[in-house]
Length: 440
Image 1 (cartoon, rainbow, N blue to C red):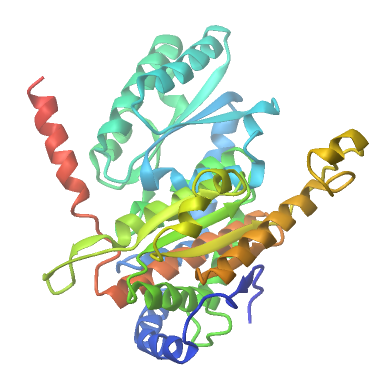
Image 2: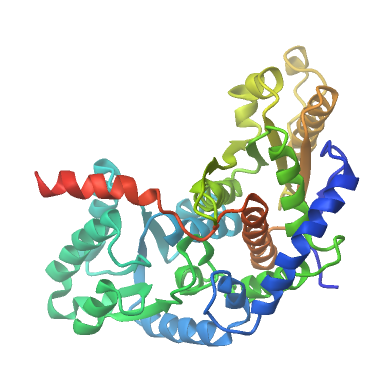
C-alpha cells in the first residue's frame, strides 16, 4: 500500500454504502482497463496515467531548464489557457502561496491566460521595463493544438517585444510546448525555438504531469520529481481494487450516487486561499470531461455534473445562505489545509464586547471553529458532504491530489456513459469566433 497523505472523511456523505459497493463493482472492469494501460506508452485516451512514470520527460525538461536558466531571466511569462496552465497555476499557488510575486524572488512568474486588454497590457508594460533595463525574460508558450486563438494572439504580442529588444537572438528566450507536428511545433523548428512535445493522446486538462506543467514549475524551482512521485503513488492506489485506498473510484461512486438522485451540482468548498486555484483546475476537469450532449453510443443525453468552487471563509458571506437555504441539489467536498505557521489575535480586553472568545486565540483555531460550525450546519440540515483534509502542502501531496481527481473524473465518465477525453461543444464558440474575426 502506497502512502496516502489525505484524510478522506465520508461520515456525512449521506449515501447507502450497500449501493456504493454496487457502483464500485460496476467500476471494476474500468479500473482494470485503466490499470492495463500502465507501461504501454501513449496510445490510448487514458494514457496520461503513464506520465508520472516517464523519466524521459523529467530528464528532457530538466535539461532545457538548465539551458534556459543560463540567461538568468527576471520573469517567466507562461502563455496558455485552460488545460495549458490551470494545473500549473494550481500547484504553483498551493506551494508558493498567493503572495509569491510579492516576496521579491529573483524570478517572478506571470500567467498570460486571457485576452483581457488591460490585464495583458499590464504584464506587457512590466516586461518591457525589464527588457529596457537590460534584463532578460523567458516566454513559455503552451498550446496543445498550436492554434488556440487567445494563446496565439498573446504569443505574437510578446514575440514582437522580444524581437524588438533581443533582435536576431529573440529565439533564445522562448520555449514552446505543443503537439509534435502542430503548426506551432513546425514554427518553432523553423525558427530554432526550443520546444517540448505533449503526447498526442494526452488532453490538455490531463497534461499537468507532462512538459506542460513540469517545465514552468521546474523552472521556478519546484520539486517536479516529488510531484511525479506523488502522482505515481496516486495512480498505484487509484487503480487498485481495494476500495480502502482507491479514493478515485470511491469518490466517483459517491458523486455518481448523488447525481442519480438529481444532486447534479458538486461544490468544492476550499478553506485555503492558496489551494483555491486547485478548485478552478478541478472545475475545468469536471466541466469539459463530463458535460456532454452525446453518450458513447451517439445518443443525445445532455448529461453533466456542474462543478462550482467556493472559498472559505470568504464565501460563507456570499453564498452560504443559498447553500444552506436553497435547493437540495448540491453535493459538497470540503477541502481543509493545515497552515504552515500560525497567527494569534492579541489580547485586547476592549474588543471582547465586539466578538467574544477570540482574544489570544490562534487564527487557525478560529478557522477550525468556523469549519466545524459549517460542517455541523450542513449535517443538521442534511446537506451531503465529504471532507478532504490536507495535512501538508508539498509537491508530493499536490501530485497525489491532482492525479486522484483526474482518475476520479475518468471513472465518472465511465459511469455516465460519456467520453471524458473530448470536448466537441467547445468548438461551437470557436467556430463562431472565427466567423466574426474573418468579417472584421
